[in-house]
Image (cartoon, rainbow, N blue to C red):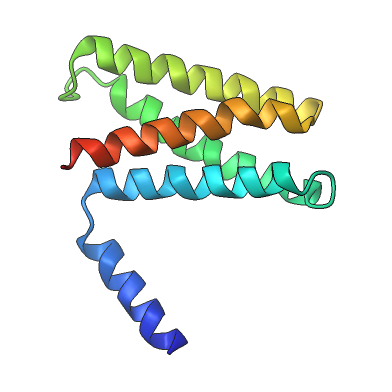
Length: 122
């Protein structure tokens, strides 16, 4: 059964739209950050790894929306870039001085953007 689930997941990833993949990644990292927050400090050793993965995704978003040929309207691109800059700042703050309540902003941003990306596909 486990192999069947992995095969389904791989097929779903290959056929999912880029927006759905982005939404799924953001939701996954929000969930992982929430789990770390909920079990603080026991799972604190996982924090840097999840933060780095989340930061990489946001770096890709910022890089994409700052290209002149990106199809989103300029104000939306600017908002995404600003959110990305905020996420980077929060990430570095958390790495320097970890505190569970500092995770709330990243969790909420990821959830909101994930929901928005999914809503845009409807």
